[in-house]
Length: 215
Image (cartoon, rainbow, N blue to C red; front, top):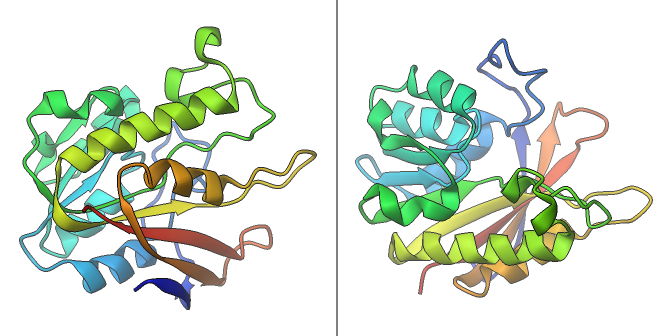
């Protein structure tokens, strides 16, 4: 790709959130996953999400004949997603930083939306708010560490798509740039896809997807 690409996709959340979630705004639409799976994968390929969340990447991968794999730290989410997957044993519960300990095979493709953190916050979602690891700098350092582990389970030249949004507010957080720099420590940036949502919420009109390749 080696460039920026602008596309429009429908913003429609096809799968209802589980009863213990406040809503569906913590995940991206299925249309986003389908777009990248059609472009970069084929049936039978292994698709990995290191922050599986509510399972959108895994559900769409399985529906399209790909083999889903993932890690989710939250036990309720992991159980809810695994309970709806045919290949449920491929979704592991645990810290995604420990992904190498789960014995995953080499992956053909990965896609994720990691936990977000505004730069002025101290609560670090990658450490469950542990005050010993507070701060945005620690968050980015941990993200770089996790993405280094991800690189080790990706096939050579496999594609990794990282979805993120910049965070407005009193202190603007250029999260897309900062996560991109963390990923570039281990992957080669191949381009950016800016997605305009058709029918999205007034506060969620577009998103950014950084496309990397495993060297």
